[in-house]
Amino acid sequence: MDNKKLTKKGALGRILRYMKGQIPLVVLAIICAAGSVLLSLYTTVLIGRAVDCISENGVDFERMIPVLITIAVIIPAVALLQWLMYFSTNKITHKTVKQLRADIFAHLQHLPLAYIDANSHGDIISRVVNDVDAVSEGLLQGFQQLFTGVVTIIGTLVFMVTLNWQITLVVVCITPLSFAVAAIISKLCFNKFKEQSSIKGELTGYIDEHIGGQRLVKAFGFEKAAEAEFGKINERLNVCGRRAQFYSALTNPCTRFVNSLVYAGVGVFGALNAVKAVSGGFTVGDLSCFLQYANQYTKPFNEISGVVTELQNALASAARIFALIDEKPESSDEDKKVLEKCDGRVQIKDVSFSYVPEKPLIENLNLDVKSGQHIAIVGPTGCGKTTLINLLMRFYDVVSGEIDVSGLPVKEITRNSLRSNFGIVLQETWVFRGTVRDNIAYGKPDATLEEITAAAKAAHAHSFIKRLPQGYDTVITNDAELSQGQRQLLSIARIMLSLPPMLILDEATSSIDTRTEMKIQNAFDKLMQGRTSFVVAHRLSTIREADCILVMKSGHIVEQGTHSELMANDGFYAELIRSRQEG
Image (cartoon, rainbow, N blue to C red):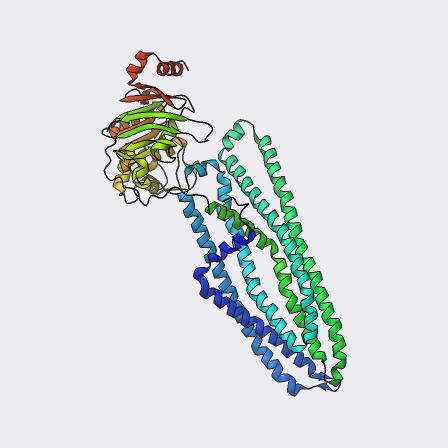
């Protein structure tokens, strides 16, 4: 769902649905809000009575002291009820946001890679972090004002009617002006805050992109150009933010103006009624009480307008969050079969695939891989080598045709069971914050230290790991602590530990020096014995011994055979090999 289609009302409704499990806390908050407001309103009545104890003959302490004692008892009770209300609203907010954040992250795990690849990672991060924080702030402010505000408005109206219904009518007649002003400005705010959230996501994406590629930025002297582009996005955010704040800032003074009209109306009509006090009409104490009620009645409107920025920002952010949650996940694996015994056979039958419908990449691809075969995939950049790997792992689904593993179509196999039978080492290394031990055991969390050490030795990573401050228990906090080659060795150690029946090596030794590569290649040769393996490589040393070499060009297999057969054919493969040797 496009976030433009999700209205403010729709976003609010979905946030409220997250609170279904917290009804007891909501009830407690409402009760506490009602209790604190009603006691506060009753205090106003008591103050009016105390005022009436003062006359030109002096102060009637006999009547005033019991009133003051009652006020002294009520004030701590109001404070306690308000504390309980804030405690409840805080808990409601943080539980709601916790569940919302958990749902977003869980949904991210089920989104297809096509969505992750097609959208800015910085924008996705911004939705999970910044937008959720904005919702949290808006909910916290909104609920606290909502519970007390509604009860205050209703309560003051009831109390005012009991005092004088004519003056109350004046108050009620002026109130709709406040609502009208707030509604108009609120709509303007929502649109601007939604735009602001979108630009924030774009800015986060740009920053994320340039921090990750900072070496290249510096290497190509792109700093000034990067600053200029950042400045353009930042300026758009600045302009949009100023307008959003301007519109939200209008709400408070506008509602205050309307509220001042209410206060003035009460003052004028109340003063006229107070003149009749001698004949048992509206007393000075009643007027004092009514003026305080007028302030208390208009206070919620002022407070709500005061937090309109947070509320509108929260709803705009919620729209972006729910747009992400509404993205279509990968197809369900509920009715799929579990691949329990994998013999390593792979058949690709008339497969066609494209990332963009109008730009075909792979067309009518056919391949029959026997169990235990070592398949090398070569070809120029963009010919479809890595795409073939993506299709084997079901990171993407084929447009037409079929891929079978062990005689079963991959679309009929659960993704987890399919992928657990593949060991994969990509050119892009990835390590996460945690110990070296945890990083190696990522695919086998229950592995013993002995097994992890053996895998590290097989990957020739043991020597550099032992030189780390705490060895296998060293915590890796960022990529800078390890070189690219060391991170690649940890990735290879993961595969050495899990020992799956099939292997995918996508330029697995590209970041490793030649001497270490030779050692790892020997380890790979042992590992690949009896296992079906697919190797994407440019170096001749890694493909020469393959049982079958697939030569790809423009999404098609143009040649296949052993190294000697292909060289004897003197075709496209031989041309590739000669060009690399010359290079």
